[in-house]
Image (cartoon, rainbow over all chains, first blue to last red; front, side, top):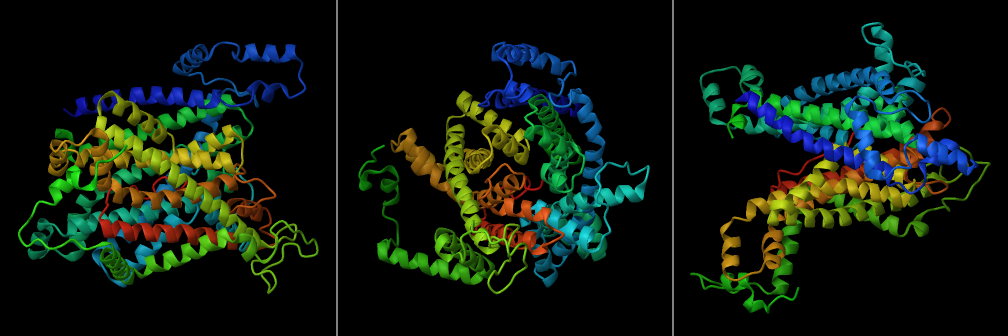
Length: 316
Length: 318
C-alpha cells in the first residue's frame, strides 16, 4: 500500500519536471537579445559569430535545440559554462556542500528557536508571553533577509569585529570554529525567518490540539502539564509543522540567492545569481533545473514522510 | 454580459420569497451606516490593524505627493555634505553624493507602492480568473491551467523573479512584471479551491435550476463567495511584492540609478557601512514597517473572515 503511494507520487512528478524543463528552456531562449553576442563581444565579425552560433547549436530550430539539451541532461551533462569553460555539473558540485551546510545550520536555528516559542505561546494562550511570540513572528516574517544580513554585518562584523570578512567554504567537521564564523551570519539571517514561520505553525496547531477531548482526558487523569504539552499534544501538532519545515528545507537547498549574496557566501545561490548577471545561460539553465529537481524531491519526501506519520492520508 | 433587470435575476427571485417575520430590507443609507458602524467596532477591537491603516494611508499620501513633501530634490547633490548622519536639515542624513536620504526614501516609496499595486491588481485579476475557470470547467482546460501554475510554483519565487527580471533587462518595468508573474499562482490556487468547494452547494444548484447561465453562475453566484480569502491573499501578495521588488533592486535588477528604491538604497548603503551606518539602517526600518503594517492588516482580515487557507509567507526568505 505504502509502496504504491510512493510510486504514484513519483509518477506524478515526472510530467511536472518535464514541464519545468520546457519552461526553463523557453525562459532562457526567448530572451530578446542574442546570447552569442555575450560570448563573442559586440565587435565580432559575422563569420566569428556564425562559428560560435553553430558551436553552441544555436543555428538549429528551437524544438531541436530543446531535444538535444534534454538528451544531454538525461545523460547527466548540463553543458559547459560560457564564461569559465568548466562543466556546469562540476560548478554545481563545488557549491553544493556550502549550501547544504548553510541549510542545515539554518534549519537547526529555526527549529531550536521556533518550536519552544510556539509551544510556550500555545501553552499560555492569550498571556503577555503569547503576545510577545506573536510580535516576534510578525516581525521576523516582515523583515527583509538582506536587511537583517546588513544589520548583522554592521553589528558583529564592524562594531564588534567578531566575524571574518573573507568568504569561503570550510566544512564543519574540518574546522568547526572557522566554519561557525563563516556560516553563522547567513544561517542566523535565514534562521530568524524560519523560526518565525515554525513558531506560528506550532502555536496554531498546538492551540487546536490542546482543545481536543483526549487532552482533556489526559489532563483529568493527572498527566503533568509539561508532559501533556511535550508528549501528548506536540506529537499530534508536529504534523502540520512538518510540511512547512519541508518547504523551507527544499527552498534553501536550492540556494538562498539574496542572503548568500549579502554575505558573499559561496553557495549555489551565488552561482546562479552571478551566472544570471553574466548572462551565462548554460549554467543558469542547468543550475535552475537542478534546483527545481531538488525542490520537488524534498517536497515529495515531505509528503511521503507526512503520510508515513499520518495513516489517514494514505487510505484515501 | 448584460444582466437581466434586478427583479428577474435568479438569486433575487429566490431571495425575495416571503419568509415568516419578514421585515423591510434596509435602504442604501441605512446599509452605509451599518457598514461604518461595523467597521468602527472592528477597528476598535483591532488596534494594531487600525494603526496599520493609518500608517499605510499616510505612506500612500506621502508617495502620491512625494515631490511636494520631500524636503529636497532626491537627485540634488551637495558634495560638501557626504555620508552625514541624521541632522536637523537632513533628518535621515545624506548619501555618498550628498543627496538627502529622506527625500530619496520618500521617492522610493512610490516605486514600492506602485509595484505592489500593479502586481496585486494584475496578478489578482489574472490569477482569480484562471482559478475560477479551472475550478468551474475542470476537465482539460482546468488541468492545463493548473499545470501551468504548478510550473510557476515548482521554481522558488525569488529565483523565478530574478530570472525573469534579468531576462527582460533590469529596471522598474521588468521588476514589476517579474513580481506580478510570481504572484499569480497563489491567487489561482485559492480561487480554484473556493470554487470547487462552493460549486456543489445548494444555493449554486438552485440558481442553476432557476436558469442562470455559466457566466452568471461563475461571476455572480460563485465568485462573491471566493472573495474574502482572495482579499486576504491580496494583502499577503502586496507585502510579498514589496519585499520582492526590494530584493530585486538590492541585487541591481530593479530600479536603476540615479533613481532610488528602498532596495537599491540598502544595496548602496551596504558599501558604506564603515562610514555611515544610518544609510543602511533607516531605509530598512521604513521597508520593514511597511511590510509589517500590511501583514498586520492582512492577519486582522483573516481573523475577521476566518479565511484559513491563505499561504502566509513561506516563500519570502531566500
